[in-house]
Amino acid sequence: MIFGKSIQTILIGLAIWFCILVGVGQNPTIAAIRQLEEAPGQMVYQSRQTLTDQHGNHWQAIAFKRISADNQTSFDLRLVGFPGVAKIDRSQPLTLTDSLGKTLTATEASSDIFTESAVPEPNVGQYNLQPLLPQLQAEIPLKLSLPTIGGEPVSLSVPPSFVEEWQAVGSYKSS
Image (tube, rainbow, N blue to C red; front, side, top):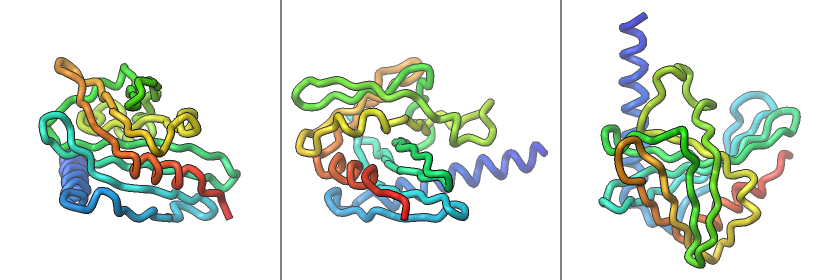
């Protein structure tokens, strides 16, 4: 079992690195909204972008809407940094501040992504944006403040085109 857990951790780490590296160097205004069928009748719509923090580190931002077979919906933002860059403080919310000074907070939802919740990846955080999405204005840039353990918060600038794409993902309906 210990050997299997080590392999799982290595595979997750490699997948995270791949996701970040694939996003690096892409034109930030061009991204595709992906549609996936996770299970019969359960659809996920997602947008992936790369954001850069105040220290020049790259973070993968994955905004996704999940629609279950019974039409229950969720809209989350997953932030993934390189391993070792930051340890996310999951006891604190993600803060979103627009360029006009309006501040919103998103609750932490990382427990939904880790199969081994006792040992979550410290560089991956997920936040519930569903209640905030109608309050975001696509034409106004955002600053995300990601709380960390024992250090300064990670600051990520989000251009208006990304906010617009997140809203497009959030507007998808089941067919």
